[in-house]
Image 1 (cartoon, rainbow, N blue to C red):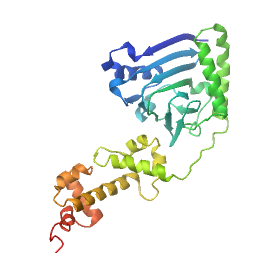
Image 2 (cartoon, one colour):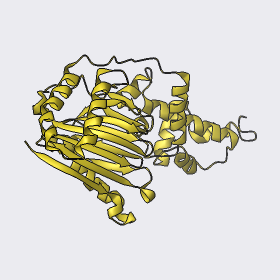
Image 3 (cartoon, rainbow, N blue to C red):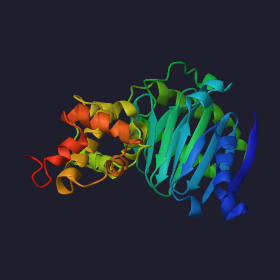
Image 4 (cartoon, helix red, strand yellow):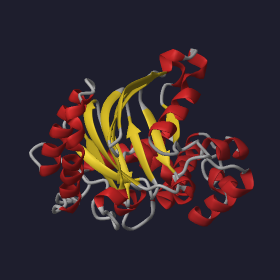
Length: 315
């Protein structure tokens, strides 16, 4: 049975301007191939303490806020497949996979599968214990029903998380008597993956939630590079969950309507606004594209609309 003592890696080992690149290398070597975007790259700090018990890997991650993504390309090109059990110890984390997002507070746990795309979002500094096992050791084939589900305090998953956290502390001492516990870890996590999944609640979005999402959209009205995926990430929602909040019009169509409304308001207040300037202020790449969209929605061109609000324009 394989056993390795504790190893610690930290961005303080390199110059500050190399920290973000070094961090991506660390998380890829520790877990699986990933991309990462730091929320505060100039002051980014991160560290990983890695331990191993047979086939089970225990990684304690302390880092600044970041967005981590396992892309479809990364997942499809991998040879090995793992289940990862994220146990939140400090701060908040969001695990998104298979159309769901689990919001983690300290003591909570969620599972994700390296064989499919997933994303992890940490809005500020955090600490997590991540336990990683080959899927083959757990006999886990179809995991779509168990990923990105919250195992909150009081659940069987949370009890398992507490036991794993305790075991992780003892691994630091490297006592050989602990080696016999690998089979118990596999059995424990196997029970978590096969036990009834936590209930998934799908409540109607509150007015406050929708107000927050629309505020994020208004903040990006002038951003021509805006995407629905960016909005989902900022709102801590999966793409599918985000679309559920817009049953009549998709978020992209709502964003377009908000941009046209902004253009109309601007033209009413200042009919002399240059159309090309207005196009960029409303998030359009080109003047011609803006004119087409405006005319399609309003029924007249921007100039014709503005003329209604100039002196004698309506006569």
